[in-house]
Image (cartoon, rainbow, N blue to C red):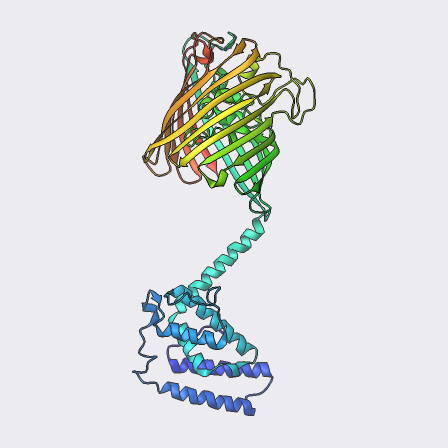
Amino acid sequence: MQLFKSHGRKKSFILISLTLINLLSLNSGKTLATEDNQELMGQIQNYAEEFSETKPNDPITQQIPVYQLDDVSPTDWAYSALLSLRDRYDCLSGYPDNTYRGNRAITRYEFAAALNACWQTLESFLAESQAELIQQDDLIVIEKLIQDFQVEIANLKSRTDGLENRVDALEAQQFSTTTKLNGQTIFAVNAGGFDGDRIINPKGIELADENPQATFLYRVALDFDTSFRGTDLLKVRVDTGSNGILDNATGVLEPTFGSIIDFSKRPPRDDEIGIGRAFYSFQVVENLSLSIGPLIEALDYIDNNNYSDLSFRDFSTGNLIYNYVLFAVDGIGGGAVLEWNPGGSDFNLRALYIAPDAANPSQNGQGPLPVSRFTPLLYSDGKGSRGIFGGFHQGMVEFEYNPSSRFSLRLIYSGGRVFARRFDAVGVNFEWGFASKFAVFGRYGYSSYQDTDFGDINPNYWMAGISGWDVLQGGDRFGVAVGQPFVVNEIGNSTQTNLEVFYNYAVNDNIQISPVFQAVFDSSNQKSNGTIFTGTLRTVFSF
């Protein structure tokens, strides 16, 4: 039965009555001439005559039209009428506790939804030949309510149809009920050069005698995040990228002490598609979680900083987004991470163990390893047993005090073996939001590397900077940072210093564009090297 749109009440009632009789006839298989139907027709005629004689001062005709109200309060006749229908026909349950939450007024759309539910119940009575259960006065009242709320009912139907279409589309398009897909694509244009005649590395070997060509580089990463219980996470990342560390100027001119654009060195090289993460995280007990897997990245957990941490959002220079001397194993490996937040307090404890070539059982393997770029400089023989507990592994512990979103202090220990030699390091990481839109931050590290090509050495590291956000517009971010990644007397005759300035302009929540400027002074700890300058235009698409 369609919603009635007649202009007169008498006409509307007659339409309801005739429809009722026709439904009874169709569903009962009887003709209109039966005694039962003749008696019903007589009752309907009496109601029709009585209704047609309703006076202008009748309580129903004197009500203020409901469509003039912003909401429907318990004192309105419509509200009382609907409650009466609910009590007689059990046509709606209200909220889960079967109430309307006391005497709270309900919006017109809430009322329209409840009215529509009652109307559908009465329709089912008519369709099932149970019209005798319906009081004719109630048909008159509900018809008037439908007239007054026809706009809201039509809108609700339109919204419901739209939601059904969206649900159908989602069900058709989703590839899993447990897995979510997140992605990121980075495009960047990079160019740079240097002063002087040539650039040499820390051992005096020439790296370049002319400026490198400008490049257009990219990186793509797709994360498949799966949860089976709601509190766990199985992450698999598929990524690819352009020519590794060689797709940007500092990768050619200063590849040793962390001047490389960090996001370019992570994915596989030469358009190869690889797996960048593969681990499973779950909650052991409340506030204690464990992550374990064959491909875990230490930098995802340790030495994080809200202002100098992500190379696609903050600084791009590697040694400005993590403590350079702490990460002898600067890469991905097999292992485990434990994270503990005692009692949900302001303190956090993290511990991890990673072996960069955990899937290789060889005793004296050679070849490339995901280790920090400075470790091959220290150990030129390139040998060491592989596997989970071989000559390449790193353990880290971080203690964090985080009393507010404006301040954090982290104390870090790192130690293990690289190229079968022992190393140990300690570091501190802090951030302080000293104003509503500005913050300062910094890191310091002290380390010990034994039996290197330069003897036993103790490299130091430091960086500091200032960052701001939402200054020119909401969502933007800028920063300036300076640092010295490898302060040590045994290597070179000077100390390399890195400077970077960036501005991150948020086009919207999914697109960010950042001009980035880098300068490297005394690169590779060599005073004879002229200053390296590079510029990058970075565009990040997140989806």
